[in-house]
Image (tube, rainbow, N blue to C red):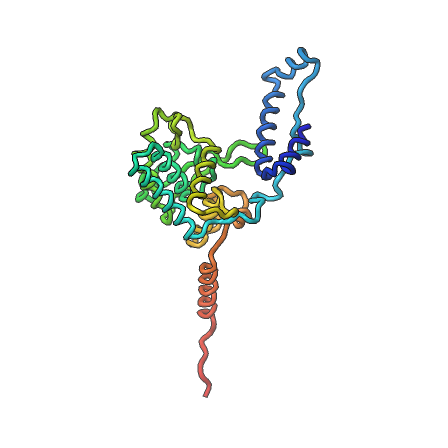
Length: 301
């Protein structure tokens, strides 16, 4: 029955492989809990119903990625102009709602801030929504960034059968402009919500942490209104753009890999969408370096 359900999700409803993987992971973890002898659910079922549950998500019927990367070849990073348009439009929405005295001004500010934070620190959707106020701290080697020199990601993408991965992301000069945006949200936006849950950085009007669904909905609405409707662009494109920025800025491959939490460098390469101008500069630099290595020629009489 469970095999038929997952087949229907993929074949009939057209769900992405990543979505099916998350469903299977949730179901697997629930069954692990149900079968744990410490809770005695198996014995209770045997006593009451003369049968017992078994694990229904196994190696044989689990969907899996052949590599740790996107399964849709259309997905890409934002171009520089597209990213600028997105941020400008998000800011315009905030300003318009503030001027109109709209209740949605702070919601618009939250969405704009989430977009900038996700890009500036290369975060996945769930990683950014799960941030707490305490997840930012100083980097002693970069005191100019103050309390925002370091972002501690506690809810990274988990590996197969493992807990959420954690990593530290250093603030880089190229995206340090986002610090002011984050400060504005903390000082002017977050405090307007009634009794935010714990130290959640991005609470909702109901004082709970913003959900994946709500974040996806607000981001999609913003992109549609801004005219950024290319099917190759999504929230994860912000992360692809971050990787591309670091590559074009000349950062070491290993540093980039650590920043985004990839186990393999080959995965990081899948996120890189460098511009033709960057490739031209690389070739030109290589030609100049090669020319310098050539021995000087002297005219023969």
